[in-house]
Structures are given as structure tokens and as C-alpha cells.
Length: 328
Image 1 (cartoon, rainbow, N blue to C red):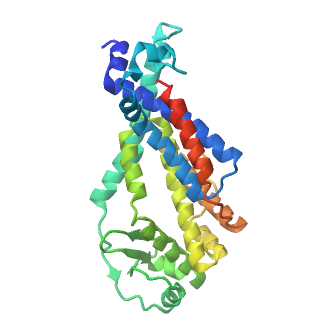
Image 2: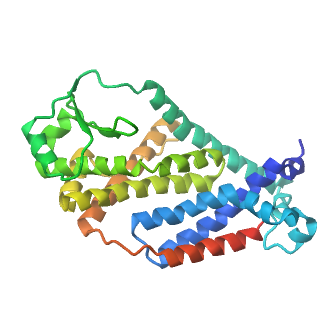
Image 3: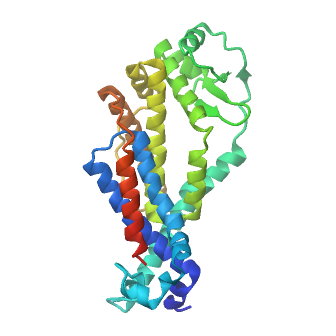
């Protein structure tokens, strides 16, 4: 199939324009966050969601507003016409559109192997721990729970010396803790990590991340959405840190708990092309530990809440919508 045929189909035009629209939104949002020094994770997350929304909904919305938007006359007056660039030939008679397709293909492979398959594997293989002690009358834990005045879900203790901590949502919400964590943390640190999981449960009552993940799946080919979805999930952890601190009033306890639960000395990355599996694992470990380190530093520095920044958000949204209307 000729490359021009691909880009002239509706799926081809949608993919191309969603890529261009997310690129514009990415540049505007990231510069806005930097220039206005937006540090509140809740506000940053809201801005970054704009990038995903621009990629998914811009083209269909614009076509509804103006069905003639794809005409030759409109393209001639547009700010950027992708067709003029995708058909350009690079040295060796390779069309630029082919490089574009390769980028989309590589991004799709990353999505499948790093995000989709792990999620499906976890859903298939995950099962309840073999030994769960329903009684939470452990003195150390009981004192920590009494320090949280909010209504708590069921607390389940896993008899395991490894560090296991997670929460479940839905009808039967629960927080799972291993005996290894209970024995390793102080009362204040234990209270902080429980409050963090409680924050996740509260946030999941409005399934924002689930909706964003569905949109992420739709945009599986888009590298900018790959980057921003990961950043959105990282902001989610910081939001839950803030909510936990609002409950315990003790950011130091949460930061010390994170340091105990995660050995956050940044690992040395061994670049070995012959062993890409180890390189991938090293990069993933580095990324995870770097995120923990960022959270620890932020908690130690002190949490500074910012106003909603709604006027900036509305202005940025309008700028993105207007510019992308003239980007084909």
C-alpha cells in the first residue's frame, strides 16, 4: 500500500492529527507548568489531562464544528498541514511519513509490552494471599489505627516478612498489610502509609485514572500520551501523599516510611546492548526509585498548596483548542 493511501484514510488522518494536536498541547502545557511554577500535583495532573483530551477528541470535535475543515481550501490557510511534511523525501528516497510510522509502531510495542501485558498478567495471576489474619488487634497496629480519625476500610494482615502494602476498591474496600511492614515501621510511620492507602481508596471513588487509562489505550500509538500518562500516575501518588499528610499532620513520618520500604539509592544503569532485558529492568528500577526519591524530597521540603489556577487552566485550554483547530 502506498504511504499516501494510508494517510488519506480516516484512521490515518485521525492518527496524524491526534499526534500533532497532542504535540502542541504537550509543548504548551509543559511550558505553562514551568513558567508559572505550578508545583501542586493536583493542578499539574489537571493540566496534563488536557494533552490526552486534545489527542482523543480534537479532530472529531473540529469536524463537527466545521465539516469542511479537511478541504484543500482550509488546508491552504491552516497553520500546519501534516501532508506537506509527511510526503517529503529524506536522503535515500525515504518519505518522512515512513519515519512517522516507525515512531508510532515503536510506541505501540512499548505500550503492549510495558503496560498492557503486565496489566493483563496481573489481573490473571493475582489472587488473595494464602494466609490472612482478620484480627487487627496487634498493639502496634491498633495504636496506629486509633490515630486515624477518619472512617477506615477493613484492615487485613498478610503473614509475610516481605514488604506488602496495597488497597482494593469497589464494594469491598480493604487495606492489606504484611507483618513485615508492621514490624519494620514505627507507629507514626505505619499510620502514614495506611493514610496514603486510604487516600487511594477515596480517590478511586471517582475513577479518574481508570477513564484516563481507557483513553491511554485508545492512544496506544502516541508517544506523548505514553509520557503524560506516566506523569499523571506519578502526580496521583503525590496527591495521595498530600491527602495522607492532611490526615496525620506528619510529613516526616511518611517520608521516613518511604525510605524504609524502598531502598531509594539510585541504581547504576548498566548499558549492555547484548542484554536488553537487564537494561530494561535497570531503567524501570531507576525510574521507580527516582520517583520515590522525588516524593521523599518533596515531603521533607514541605507541601505548599497552590490555588486552583483555574484562570490559567481555562486560558491554556482555549489556546490549545484555537491553535489545534488550524493544525491538520
